[in-house]
Image 1 (cartoon, rainbow, N blue to C red):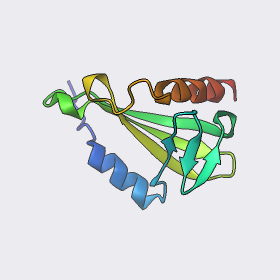
Image 2: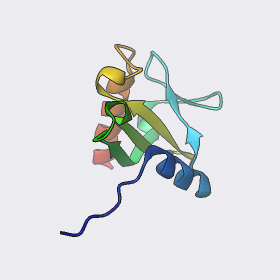
Image 3: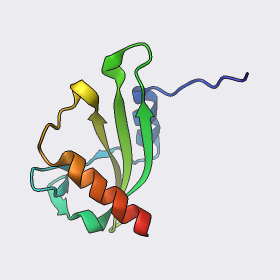
Image 4: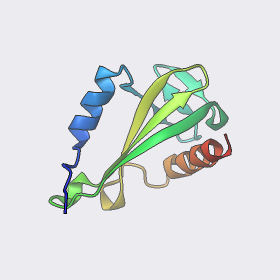
Length: 107
């Protein structure tokens, strides 16, 4: 069986930096996506790729990086821990991501 080396969160973030896709999008309580003071609504954003980290050796490594593109061409990411380590309990983040994923599948 051929085994490939799994990427780490750091490796993915460094790769995004090299590609100039290291803008960090945040999502506020109202579900607006924010980057450097500019707000985007969910239809203006699409998720291009997801990187999921399972935390086989350390449960605190359970995270997802979403590679995001705005309708104005801005590229970036959103990083979220999941499970008991999430920073987004009842703040609208999961709903906003779900809506972006639904919108992306419609494109």
